Image 1 (tube, rainbow, N blue to C red):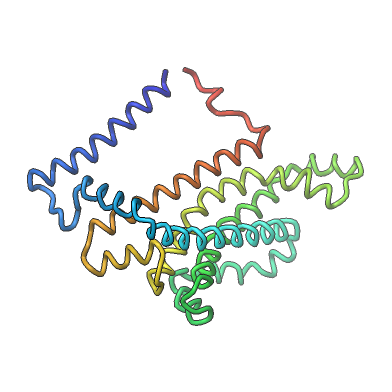
Image 2 (tube, rainbow, N blue to C red):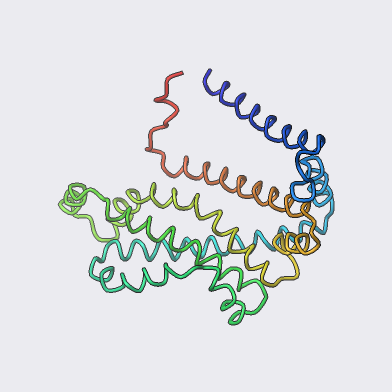
Length: 258
């Protein structure tokens, strides 16, 4: 019952926001030059989506996002697990990690362009730096949160270091890692888009930058909405993966009262 009511409230909010937006423009309260009408944004989005050449831009941005996401996640998990298990290495590297993490990622973008050029890999490198630290800190904390009693019992039963990693550390850190994966999706997209802003000949960021250069607010808003839709699709896919990987986690909806 509550779930159906929540869906109705969500739909009502969407109608209220976009209906009010459209009505405000029709009545002259909102300047369409800065805030174009939702119908105009929808028409521009449909124009792009119905053009086959548009999907080449989508493919490039998604490739940059996916590579940055996968490489950043792999490096972050590996580094987080390593330093979570090795306290001494963590103490030695701590000032270097904090110093690099304090650098604004946007500052690194021109450096990556200088090193890697205007092609694919400069965007991927920027996305990696955005994804890495989110996954890294969560993986390290997840490993450190392992119950010492569980570890002691596993060692008594003769578990090797690889057994501990597989059956104790990784399952314990899975919730932490998967929660960071959800946040990292947006960071990977941001890295790809910022890289395309700095210099590219294709991609969704390139289209948005072109629209911005022509003072075309409709194109900018349409690009933003399409990007948001892709992030939501990826987030939905992560939901499926999370529900299959963490099968032991209790479903919060089961405990909610109807």
